[in-house]
Length: 167
Image (cartoon, rainbow, N blue to C red):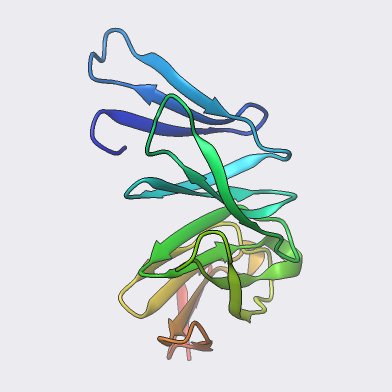
């Protein structure tokens, strides 16, 4: 949600932008259909950062909600499931083959790879709070990674597996 607009991922129909000012009568403002499957989205200001399963990270300009346009894209090595954005860095949960990918999105038309963490399972979600990236990683459980300003990651002090803390 951003104001009265809901940004909804629809695996087969892309990104749906819906005006929900009147909850009894939501109206479609625009639909951005990507070449792949959109599974995750984060909106920051006028940009929607989209995890597109087969095509990696896509950045969509939603400043005109009736005419969204692609601003930039970065093909990740795995399958992009989810994205979190902090400052000028996007953290992409990139499935079995890509782990956690860190991409500099400071210039949306020139995205730069900054780092990665090869998770042991399938990274399907990511949430970054402060300097920690929380990555639910399939059968490996929740992994927590300390993120540095440069985008590089290092394992944090604890990893939670199946609800049990381990050293």
